[in-house]
Amino acid sequence: MSDQSDRTGHAERGDRPSILGPAAGFGVTFKAMFKKRLTEQYPEQKKPTAPRFHGRHQLNRHPDGLEKCVGCELCAWACPADAIYVEGADNQDEERYSPGERYGAVYQINYARCILCGLCIEACPTRALTMTNEYELADSSRRDLIFTKEQLLVGLSEGMVDTPHAIFPGTDEGAYYRGEVTSAAPGTVQQERTERDKEVQQ
Ligand code: SF4
Ligand code: SF4
Image (tube, rainbow, N blue to C red; front, side, top):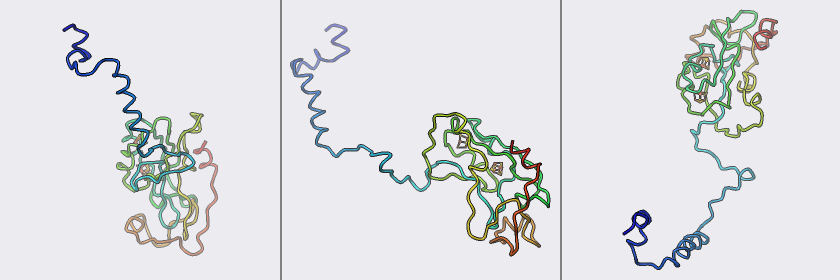
């Protein structure tokens, strides 16, 4: 037996004339023609993802609209792809974004780098960062794949007032984490964004 026949096994089997080889190959194709088609009609028909699918991120709010992010950067440190950039800043009474001392002033996720592994959301101590089921993240521009805080921050639900605004009167940061604040206090209004915030956002 030659080296070639050892590699292909044709001579060793010896049970099928070589001319029928291609026909046998097409047999696989013919059999597949009568099987149920598995073609996905995407994007016309979108299949729902698994409930815990890791898609686009979301920055969450407390029930009164204040932001849960405290700008600690733990998510950025946990990220294996270096896809997150965070800058924290101090809250001030006249311009408050979160119940505690600090908030995430700048928050960016680069989806040209992100591998949607979810390590960042595991690292977040306040559940400020979670992942949605949204997976349509492709774009032709690298710049457009960098999502800013404004894009990632969840919208307002009933009972919320947009940031910045005052903490619920008579409470502290702990009350928020114990779930004692369930909506914005009556009369809560959005504070004016100062030049400080505008500078940080640039
Ligand atoms: S999902 Fe993974 S890769 Fe994407 S930002 Fe989070 S830690 Fe980084
Ligand atoms: S999202 Fe969570 S881990 Fe990341 S900076 Fe904000 S609080 Fe910290």
